[in-house]
Image (cartoon, rainbow, N blue to C red; front, side, top):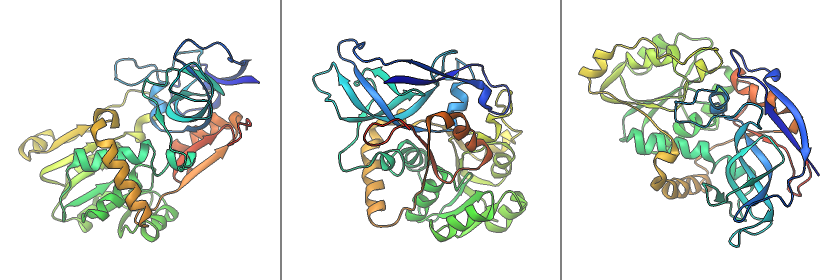
Length: 343
C-alpha cells in the first residue's frame, strides 16, 4: 500500500485554493514505528475552520501549525493497523490529531481517545465529536446559562452553532439563531426547534435584534466575528457574556484577524465578560458533556447532521466548502471505508 499525502505547498494569503497543497505519494510506513507507537490508518478527517489558522503559519497563537512541505494537520479518526504498544491492539479505533495522509505513526497516549465499539466513526466525529463537545463546553461551562436568559448564536446552522442553540433550548433559554439562507433557517426551525431566527443574507441583523430582544442579550456565542459581533456587543445586557469560539468571517481574508470596533467602555461599565476557550482548556467537563449529549440524542432532543464527502483527492476542495457556506452540518472527509479500503 502506498501512503497518499496532501502536503502544504504554500501559506494561503486569501481565499483557500487547491494550489495551496500538493498531492504526493510515499511508500507505506509499515514497520517503521518506534517503541510505544501505533500505526494509524485514517478513516475520517474533520474539515474544521481552525485548519485555516493552522496552515497560516502564525506560530504565536497557541494553536498547532502545519509545517511547510508536510501533510496538513487535521482532527482524525482511524484504526490501528500495527502496534508497538501493549495496551493498544490492532483494529482499535482512536480519535486525535491526524493529518492528510493514509498512514501515520503516533504515540497513542498523547491525546488520543479510544472509540467505543458501539459508536460509529461518523457519530464519534459528529454528535459526540469535538464540535459537539465545543458547543457544550462553550455554552455550559464558559457561558454559565440560566433559564430565561437570552442566548444569541451566530453561525447557528453550523456544526458547533446548531448544538449550542439546541442546548440553550433544552436549558430553558430564549434562543436567537443567526444563519444564512432559507434552507438553513428551515432546518433550525423545523428540526432543531429554534423559533427566533435571523437570515444575515437577506435581513438587517441589527434591526432584527432590536425586534427580537429589545431588552438585550445575556449570552452571545460568537462563531463568526465581524459585523455580527459588533451588532451583538452593542445590545448586551449588564453582566452579559461573550463566548468566543471562532471568527470565520475573517479566516479567508488574507490578513490578520483584527477585532471589530466595539464600544469597550460599554463592556467595562456593563461588567461584560469576554472569554475564548478550547475543549482542551476544560478536560474535566468532557465526561459530563458526553453523558449529556448521549442522553439528549437518545431522547430525540438533539438534531444533528453530518456532511460526509468521500475521496482523498478531493480534500482541498472539501475543506474549502466551509468558507463558502456550502456544507450541511459537520463536514467530514472519508478517505477509507470501514474495511480499510482507500477512497
